[in-house]
Image 1: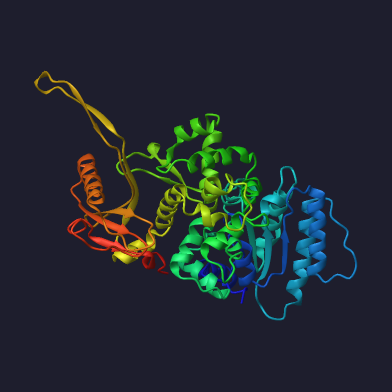
Image 2 (image 1 turned 60 degrees about the vertical axis):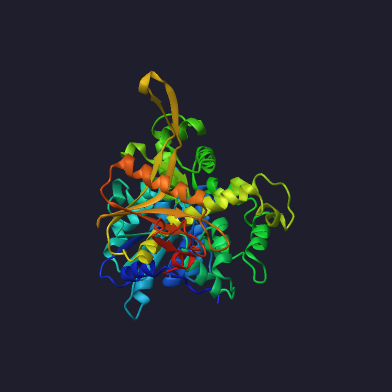
Length: 492
């Protein structure tokens, strides 16, 4: 029951295509920690040899690990002498695989799996030189699939996918494994015999994200609130201290990455690169850009270019659910009571967080939103819109006074090629929403401010994305043109 591969159809197709092709294949599988990369590979392939890098281990320990794995896969009854270098180790692996190929009575590719490659390929270890030799001098001419996998996505992209030297352009296929969508999360829970309605699931998703390893902690018979309390706040909870391990396991000098995540957690509208550097107290220069790039490539933050702005005005937003939840609640609470979230979830700060977290959930399900709107095949660019509060001077009739206009923020809009711009209003509420006169006035102001600021000729369509829908009244009539619900976000 627990070994069913949920979702991942496109990713599995890529792996199977590599298995049936007529050439040697080198497949890179990237994705953040705990997202299920190893599970995907092992559920798809029958593996001829695999090795997983050891964290914080020197080259001698890694080579000893290699020797034990080689003995296991070769069914050797005698101890194998550990090689002195990775070049020697890859020579041993090549001889073992040659023997496997000779023994095979039926055709089919051997699969070699290097997991947690950044741990294997530590600085000056010689691993990458050995891998280059293995591929260029042996594997490239054989019927083989070499899978390389690592959680440090930025390292993998820099040193493997975009490698210079002997591995330049050697990657034949790549997979960037994303966290589960809401649909996949629902299927995953069902595969484990857990029956939750969608309101319960989205609450879990907003705190834990679509990370399979985290979702495994959910127990039947407990509400979303109870599960979150146990997993995130109890002394033995898996995610109580996960934050301190998460970033240091992925990045060298992770303190800078954590500093960026902290300042973004405090900003709902997102921050520009200069603001991040200033608030996180990062050194100005290329290293700051590298930190932002690594965080984005690893799926923790997302960049958005506001509507009508240039790329240099890009804003960054924290979109990793667990990191945001940790910094808003877990870190600030020393209580290990199993009912902690039961209390905190009723506070004003939790209401603010839930609104932001629901927006992030919507932003991650753009394809589902487009499908629900019937525009899956229409090209559309997602953007944000931000107009800061302005002060103007009115000098009419020599009567000088100041007039202040409030700032306007739109967290999501879809600029469509068919002459329409969907302006989204995303609200998290546990019942149908009924707009008040004040709500209607605010939404009208946003539409008007956007139209005036952008001078767009396109039709503006106000689209509400809520949990249980809209209770239509005189304030929504003629204003809200489309209403999407949580069920739309759960579409495949």
